[in-house]
Amino acid sequence: MDFTHMRASGKISHTIEKARRRLWGKTVSWLRHKPCYPYIYKSYWHYRFNSVQPPDSDKQQYYTAVPNRGAGIGHQMANWIAGYWFAGLFDLKFAHIPFSNDKWESLLGFGENEILAADLLTRKGFKQVRLPLFDEGSAREISLTRHIISSYADQNVLFVAEQDQFYTEQYGVQNALKEKFYAAKARQKDELLYDSNNFNIAIHVRRGDIVTGQENNNPNLLMRWQDADYFEKVLFNVINSIQVNKPIKVFLFSQGDKKEFSKFEDISNINFCLDMGAQESFLHMVHADLLITSKSSFSYKPALLSNGIKICPRNFWHGYPRTNDWILTEEDGSFDINLLAIRS
Image (tube, rainbow, N blue to C red; front, side, top):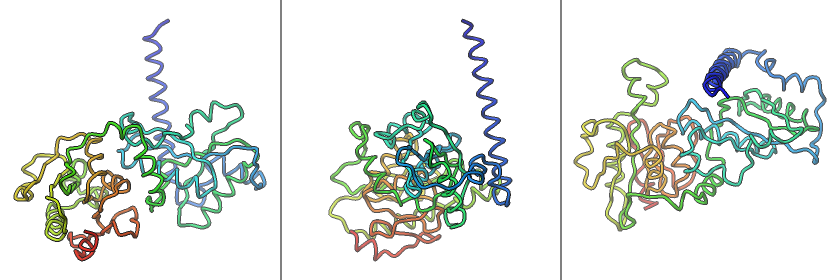
C-alpha cells in the first residue's frame, strides 16, 4: 500500500473541500438578502414541490449546527447554542457536532449523553438536509423554515443549520448549558488558582486580534475595542462598592506584556494571568465569584456558565438575562453601584 499516495490524496481532498466551503460561503453571503436566496437550497425546492405534512411519529428528525472550525471557541459555542435553541423551537431532537478542538470538547462536556450527528448519518435511510439562513426576528422567514421542515415529515432527517445561523439571546438555553457543564466528566479534574477563603474577581481584557483594528481601522475589530480606562473604572467601582466578608483577590486575564496593564499595578492582591492557556482562563472566568467581561464571546460564554456575579458591557451583540446576577455597564465603564450593593 502506497501511504505517500494516500496522504497526498487526502491533502488534495481536504483542499478541494475547503475551497468548496469557501465558495459556498461567499455565495450565501452575496445572495443572503436577495429575494432569490432560498432558491439555492434543495430543501426549499423540496418544500415547493411537496405538500406540508403533519409530523409522523414513526420518523426521527434532528436539528444541528456546525461549530465554525475557522473561528474561536466563543464563536463556535454561539453556533452550538443556536443549534440547541432552534432544535427546541422547531420541535426537533438535537444532534451534537463536536467542537474543532478536543480539549474544548472535553472541557465543556456539551456532547456528553447527546446523539452525534455523524452517527445518525450512518443509519440506513437517514438523510442530511441543509436549511437556508433565517432572521430569528422575522415571522415570515421562521414560517418558511417550518414549512421546509414539515415537507420532510415522512422521512428520517438530520436538518443542518446554515453556517453561522445567528441567535441573539444565547442565554435562552443557559440552564441546560450549566447542567451539562457542571455534570461533565472534566469537572473532576478542574484545577484553580482560587482560594475559597477569598472573594475572587476575574476580569477579562480582550486584546490579541482586536489590537490590529487600532492599526488598520477595521470596523469589525474597532467595535470590540475597550480602553484600559474602561476596565479600570469598572474594577475600581466594584472593589470600592461591594461588601464581602472575605479578602478580595483580582485575576486579570488577557494577552500581551504586563506593562500594557500598568494602570492595574496599584491594585492590591492582583494577579496578571497573561500566559495562562485558553482553557484554563475560560475555566477561571466561569468559577469566579465576580466576572467582569469584555465585548468578547470568550468571556460572554463563561458568564453564561457562571454562578457568580457578572458585570458586562451593555452594548454587545448577544443579549443578557434580566436577573439579579447580571449588571450592565455603559461605554465609559459606569454602572449603578447600588445594584452591586444589593447583591453583596
